[in-house]
Image 1 (cartoon, rainbow, N blue to C red):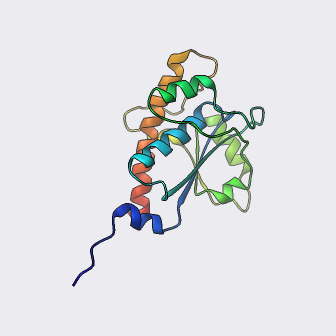
Image 2 (cartoon, rainbow, N blue to C red):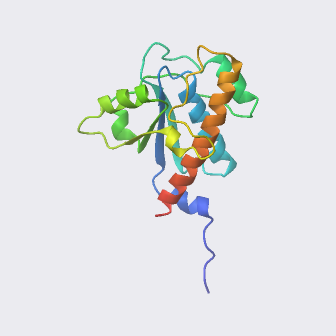
Length: 174
């Protein structure tokens, strides 16, 4: 008698969770949106136990604050919650997370500058996971209008979908 195969999500959850840190400048627009989008995507697939997700900023001036109200509103219209509070990335994060995903070149340079001997995280721009949009950076919507926040969410939904697919392949040994 053969035993039934475990559901894919249950089998994946048995392994150590893959940890992700999304990083932007102040941790109130792009990175909390990326965190929220990724959490939304994994919840839709029942993969909450498979991933550990957080966000941070390279700067410290918004520490403790929720995401920008305009970004929270834009995300809420899509059914996406942005639950995090701003925090600043530390060098220790580069040893605690498997993947650190940056929003632009400035963030990428700042995060790489933190990398020391204990850094084990794979540091990369989130834009590399886009399939529908050809971009190098996720633009900062902070000083623009409402449409900028929607544009960022469009880009992050694309990038986070591609990221999730790549990570699931990675976890499956492919």
